[in-house]
Length: 111
Image 1 (cartoon, rainbow, N blue to C red):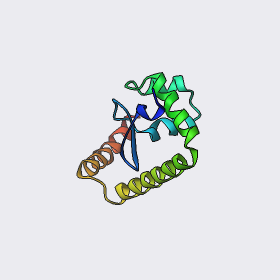
Image 2 (cartoon, rainbow, N blue to C red):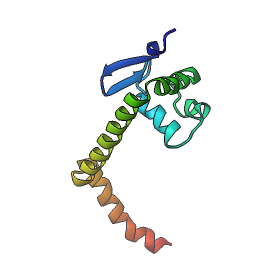
Image 3 (cartoon, rainbow, N blue to C red):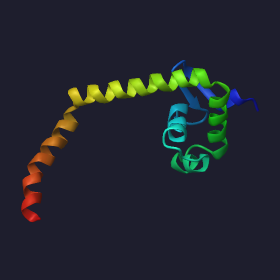
Image 4 (cartoon, rainbow, N blue to C red):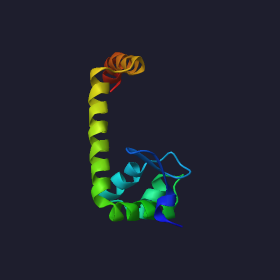
């Protein structure tokens, strides 16, 4: 099997492990930034095999400069989306915050 056969390239910024909804960024983030072992990563993502984790790492090692750009773009997109969500929370998030605020005085009294 060729290494590229492990992946579905849906778009230049969306590469997923074949047969899953898991993007390579999820696997590589755990491997590079959280220093998890391939086995720990396979345990964390139940739809991914250990072989797929190793294939993703090998893909990264073979295409390091392109994947580094891919990951940097993904991290920047994630940061931007978090900021946007904080500035414009969804109605569900607003209800949850109100419930937390309403329950906070009750929790303090019970302590």
